[in-house]
Length: 341
Length: 282
Image: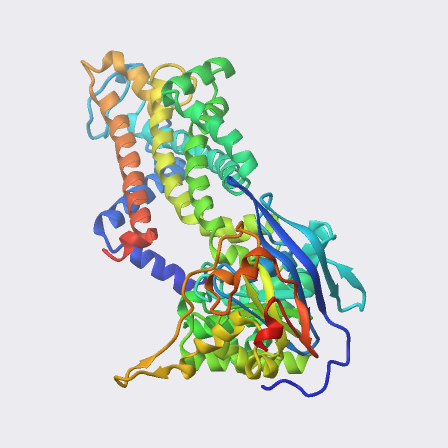
């Protein structure tokens, strides 16, 4: 699973430009996501990386048209999606009823919590069958066969029997496979995976990642992989977009990002990987961390990462940096890039 | 639910012997009422003046009333009306209450509107509201059902709304939304199925309340017309003879107590079994 050497042949499945999301709260309006640019190409994986509260999940909900209403809305930007019919539409402009037709059929999503993302009172086969009846307009018998077939596709052993099982009869890894089967049942063009392996054992994680990778290759499906785990990013992603406090701070191909991270936040994240832990004088290995926490959505002008940045200087607090190309295929949002590079 | 699941359901439910006992009692009452013409020894309306207010004996096991009618036969036939009215109240209040409760729990805009109405209705005592409604609508079996359904709907609304508020926030509801499931289907399939158990429990309690309330209304003369034998009308008619012939009120009263009690016990058993926090303790 390494980055392909060739650039994508087709245009992007999903192209987000200047996305800004606003929420009305009791303390006034906040902007958890601003100015986000992001591309997902067919058959490729774009990883969206960031800490909790960086806006990565809000970005994915905005794409799905599932921002909590009426508090949340897309305030600016475009979410251009190229569907199975080849037409490109701006999802940010579509009415809710049209968006619902896209969900499941064109864009599907899997979640962090395989324990609770399935309906406990329906058998897993029924849940998949319901999905394909809804979107593919199959009859009940054909839908059930499709459900069994999908469970086989996600490598659930004895799929025909397991289709009758209820979620509580399955392990976490199995349930995540069922979620993937559910998401894949209508062969979507875009899969949004929101931390799909976080709640799983490491060995199961690897199996699930391999499964997603296989389905992506076989179906030419674009994947937006949301995670805070850079180890997983290195394994699955083709391109990486790093978010911090609602903004994209760096985007790059996966190799460039790990070999030559440009933004101080990306560097700090990579330094936090356990593999980079440094051995102390007393022989203890020390895993590093970034001091502080993500600033609230409404904060002072200037670079949002500045308060936690080891390279900050006075200018950082005064001026908000723009996302600028720093190398072919790599962009970073840092005033001091020229000095640091 | 397939057969194995159903068998498991009943095995769990009947683990407590009291629940099994209640179920057997209730089933007996229902079956006897259902097959009244086969079971009843006499016609419930056949009058024999010579036999007025006979105590229980070999011919009339539970005695006769002031018109010489067989009390046992009247109880058996009266069960049809009493249980039938109770059942009809359950069905009507469940339908209305579940619909309103789902709407109130799921759509926040409707919540305040529906729940303030519910609060207003619950602030009135049950039986007074029912008497008022029957007085306005007119005394008939259908209007008793309607009045009691209106009285008990708010209880169902509260239970269903509360459960819906919990279930709507569970991740699988959002997962369903990301898969393009319509709001209508989310409500009717994903949420309704998950709030079914509290609804079922509430149904058994309302059945018990409704049987009691029908008897109460009939006793007070604000219920079913006296010519239809129900347990309530029997007690109402018999009360003036209760000092001389206690059996004309005692046995219908016992029928009410037995059916209400067994329904309550069954409801308790269902609730204990379906509540995951209590299930572990069993």
